[in-house]
Image (cartoon, rainbow, N blue to C red):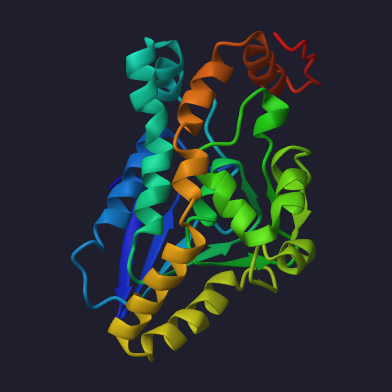
Length: 262
């Protein structure tokens, strides 16, 4: 893989993704590699914990709006576009379905699709000066990839509305207070903290760990698919609106968008 590496340390695996620049933006190619990395654990009965981490400056600043493959999907016909828009949801589902305990170690900003990815893991460790931010609605989009019910499960409906609809920037202390993240640690130490959790998981009976995780997820996510099964179609609809084009253009031009509801 070009952007993703997997390192095994006994019963612990560390998955790192790095585009080679600070924003660490999520391209379609990176989404596929992260999906492949998650699926590599499908037949792995030895690993008890998987840590997911990005760069040391930012976990990820979200989807790469300049990605040529992403642009091609935007310009494709509806049938092809629907398939392309499933890529992110497929990645998040692959991470959610890993049987081992999964932990996101997040430095810097975790934005948009990065939030969708992080809430598909079991636990989130965040640096004390880091933040989580869902700007999709500010850019004329809807939040997709099956993330809305996952966020709501973590923080409750009112706070989910502040995160997804009002696009509030949630810094580390508030993220932990809301249950959006599980622990805030000194900057530069999120991987160490995640390793401590992973080592605890690795010390436990591996089959019991997997069965208990499966039970918790089955209960928590019982209606998640009902709520999010068509979010990629909602995204495709949003893409056809003038507000979507204005949101993307305003972001690239670094100005405030002017929305009309069209």
